Image 1: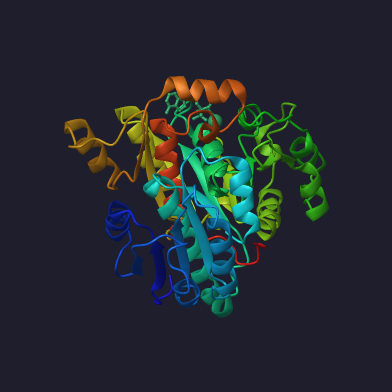
Image 2: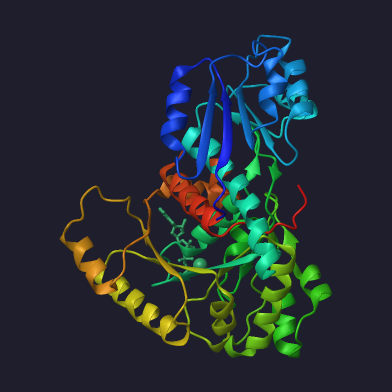
Length: 401
Ligand SMILES: Nc1ncnc2c1ncn2[C@@H]1O[C@H](COP(=O)(O)OP(=O)(O)OP(=O)(O)O)[C@@H](O)[C@H]1O
Ligand SMILES: [Mg+2]
């Protein structure tokens, strides 16, 4: 993160929104300015205030026909590289959102989704800006980040997490969440039993199988051809449609695939197999984060502990975060939670509640939870993980806006 404070201007007559914003935005990171007015009501001051802020948010007065012209003037006067966001009712018609877009508004967000939509969007913007500084020093910000999803036991919910986290990391913008702002690849390395293709409703290909059998190291053209784009916009590399031996896949092949995908995507989400095979090494050596999913039962927690030790023995710097499945975050730890964290010698970073109905429906329809059940507890929990990742591991700077 860069040290510069991000300057945010909020234009609204609603005192509660002002109060909520000042609570939600950390003073260490943001300087919040308030205008208790409407965009139209600011008149000549509009263009004066526009130029001095990194992010300008305004509460849309839907019934005032002058709002659109006011947005146009705001857009013309704002600082270069700044972002202009309208806050609107959730049922704003698509035609109105489009008009605002055409007037230069970057995003139209639902006014009441402060925690779920507005703050995460502000933080993504800040992360993107900040990423430009290390890009010059380290030359790394033009490559995507690799997030590996591992499981302490079969069936714990790791593929569900991989698919929905990948979806969240696309950071779709706007009221209708149509336009992805990050490019995300989803790689199913569960070579024999992969289920990602079904979860995102694409056809399995035999590309990985052919590559494994022929022993070739893939190039960019091969990887591009092997990818299938899902309805939600993910670039998916499916597990093979044919059965092949686990050891047919080689470390150089897996490493090459990830290196190629990192160049063209902001995030590469890898669903790891349950088996410990040689070729997970190139994933671990490239992983910016491993999410290890476990349930809080003794056998799973023991396996999770063994996996952590195994991963860290080879990759001492690896960042591993624990995700507890089928449980919402307890208000107070019970004795089995305490026993688990002691055995793990690690905190549990995230909790994914049990939500069979939403999960089942999303799975049956091959659609992300964010579409099928955006308000479900599981969708919210996965959004939280996505939010943490986009903040700590910002997207590339090279991706065109
Ligand atoms: N939070 C949840 N609440 C309820 N059911 C869930 C949840 N997460 C996953 N499931 C269900 O559990 C089953 C297994 O999920 P999933 O395929 O994601 O697990 P996995 O760990 O990838 O399994 P595998 O070891 O077979 O790869 C699926 O039927 C899925 O719908
Ligand atoms: Mg799986």
